Amino acid sequence: MLWIGPMIIASTIVCGTVSEIVSRFNKSVQGQLGVARRWAKSLLWIAGVSVEVEGAENLQGISRCVFAANHLSYMDTPVMLGHVPIQFMFMAKSGLFKIPFMGWHLTRAGHIPVPIDDPRAGLRTLAHAAELIDELGVALLIFPEGGRSESGELQEFKDGAAYVALKSHVPLVPMALIGTREILQMHTLRFQRGRVKLCIGKPIHTAGMSIKQRGEVTSAARDQVVEMLQTRQAVAAK
Image (cartoon, rainbow, N blue to C red; front, side):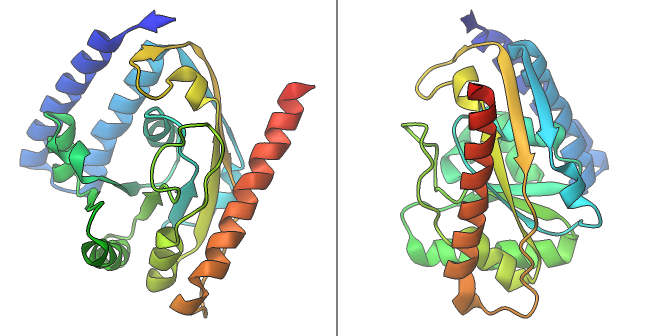
């Protein structure tokens, strides 16, 4: 068990400062994403985490899409920032944007704060996210469970990710994270060295579909995540 909170904080302060400097000369998504990727890889290195990516070929030819991933740990986002090969932004709870250095970077990088207690504002945020995908030509990461799973079991998916994918007419790409909960559990800053697997599913194409089909698309995405989790966990148990 590793107590490395001070090192994580130091890395966040350094990268947050670099993000501020970069933003004065390069306001593009690419510039800020480059800083975020270095921050993410530094966290994984500090924590002693190795990552295996499976299914990267499913992203060939895709630049705009919505990622829908299960959510187990605060390490989920660093894993994806460090290992998803295409440019993406993400939606995060608005409270994270108030954290010094990290929150400042999230704002400058154009990531999208999610209002938790205002459904109407939440719907406007989803519509804005779809517009950004079209405007900036990037992907968007959403955790459709709405938050980290306390038990580690996959929760039901909300249909926000499907809504954004349908609204912007881009594929919805399911993803399964395995092992991040063992690295950093909820309500603690104690890390455990280990291996993480990031499984990238097959894109669910939304061209020609309507917003009314968001429930169908959400179910298809969750079914893929369930299958990926069950398959990899069964292999690990042998």
